[in-house]
Length: 104
Image (cartoon, rainbow, N blue to C red):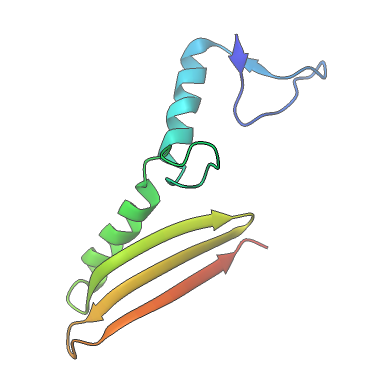
């Protein structure tokens, strides 16, 4: 048996465990939703899927308005922070902005 994710206790008050197949799924989930640089001792761990999703959405819905130059998505405690560098297509103006949203 393996530790269950997210970490919690079972009904008996012991650390919850899970079968191997579920543990493998949990590991894939952690890899997909962890941004590179988020883990202190493993800075290369993660997939960057949040950046890909945000970039794809901007390019799909606002691609005729802006050109994405750089994008960084970070999550700290309950705050999601998106740093975006872009060019406004109509004027050629280069901009950089940070967008934040807190879950609380």
